[in-house]
Amino acid sequence: MTTAAMLFEPNGLYLCLLDRGNTYNFHWELYLANTPTTGTICHITNDKLPTQWDFEVVSTSEMPSLRQLLVGLKVGTVTPMMHRPLCHRLGLIPLDLFSARYGESMNCRVWTKEALFALDDEGYVVLAISVPDIASEVNHHALMAKSQHECRVRTSRAFRE
Image 1: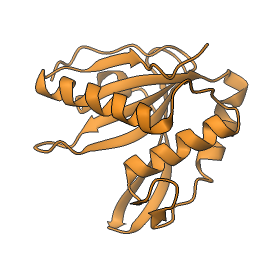
Image 2: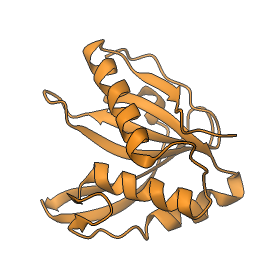
Image 3: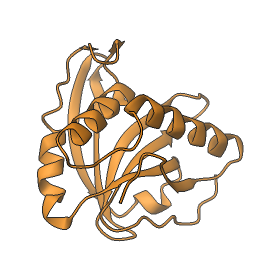
Image 4: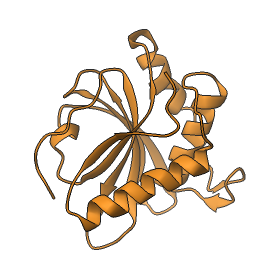
């Protein structure tokens, strides 16, 4: 994987996929950039039990140079005064064992899709394409990045100014 630092646009909301090693399953998370090199990761993990999900908000300066990062797909812009409310709202996404909306068991990918749906529905971002289409787009970029041993920071087809 290339290790050159990627730059994120300040106030950009990114759907990020991280490499899990010798698999084509990725860790999905949302990243809200404060500056080109710092921001906030919002994601869920199941470190304790396979079916016990925990929401985490982590401030970081590591995302732009994180070796596991395959793709950061910009899906929106969030004004600075809305950063904290957005992270709070993400913490309210249900961590049910099953997503009725997407017909799948909960995992980081399903939670991220639920989160994007809620953020679009409530006006935090305005998506130009459906959440399933965004999921396909970011997965495609991650597969390409993994096969080419690179990291990609892109703007989604879903993004609208």
